[in-house]
Image 1 (cartoon, helix red, strand yellow):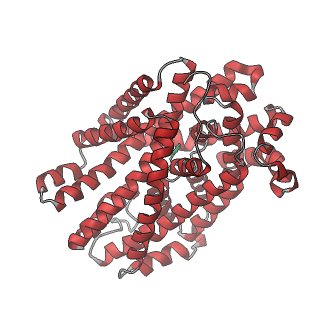
Image 2 (image 1 turned 90 degrees about the horizontal axis):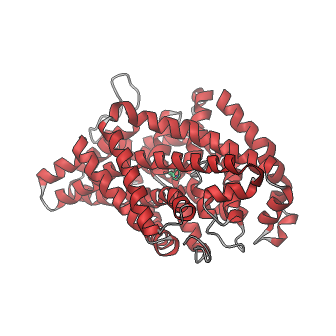
Image 3 (image 1 turned 180 degrees about the horizontal axis):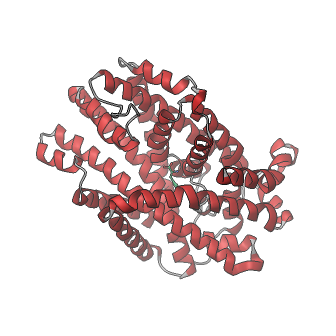
Length: 444
Ligand code: PHE
């Protein structure tokens, strides 16, 4: 839909599930717990909570507000708040679009591994042992096939558009995710060994507090709330004017943080349960194994020791992870798709295959040059692009956007806001405190 009636989320619940779906992803269930495990457990948790509520939440409000004001793709939305510099504004939109496409290109590889693990459990259940082995073994062809399947799933959802694709699938899948997640966590916590994991997670070890930890926590918070790369901006652009953005953003941040916290209650105890079952979780130097080894080796090894029940649990776990990955990947793909459909005036169903195809190709290049590119792309996007773009968005909202327009937009959907603490704090907070904090962390 290039002109005229633009798509909108049909309900508040639908938007909440879509935005929470974008936020809750592999970053929460895999990234957060393993970062916490190797960074002093509860110390990381505390710094992370601080980062989410002090820094990421106000920025989430900012990105959603730019999108809702613009009611258009990120390129146009940024131009609408920075009309004097249309070229620079377009450049920023394009930068966000490229960054999010690069994120998708590595995210799809990780999601492919999750798919491989899921299929492996399914094949094992029906006795197809050779197939189970192949889909579960790290290798170029396997990685390629799984990544392509995941990209096709992502493209198919986004092709159906905002209400029939993104909103419908997020509203269906996210409740399933919450239920599976709660069931699995409760189950793991009853197993022998779980309490050691809990202790590592919940008892702070302050000797780990360092500037590196603070940087990791900030990066994790930005990644987890999908900030800096226009994903939340594009979802905001499909919001109706009667939605209360500060409140909805708070709900998204709480759901996201709740799942990250809960994932710690699931994964860390699971590691120690695995250890009790004879699975090694530390490397030769005594450090915790890396996060991919944990999720793709330690957990499956633990499931293996649990017989058929283990296969069922493992299927549930990987279904859960895939749901989380898919509801995030669709928000990534929507950014370039909305830009291309609206800017080039093309039909969504054609554009989505083209863009999906290009990202799949980039992803394939990473797979073929895995050792050189995989880590590099992750660092370039999550350590540099996300914080820097988030910083620029904060500066735009704080200093460039006409104040009266910004305040009117925030007030839409919440006429009583003028009495609130949020109203008194947020406008100068995004202007001064957010940029200062990001710069401080970046240069330290
Ligand atoms: N928030 C997602 C996660 O935690 C990842 C993501 C990053 C989604 C950037 C959209 C944009 O897995």
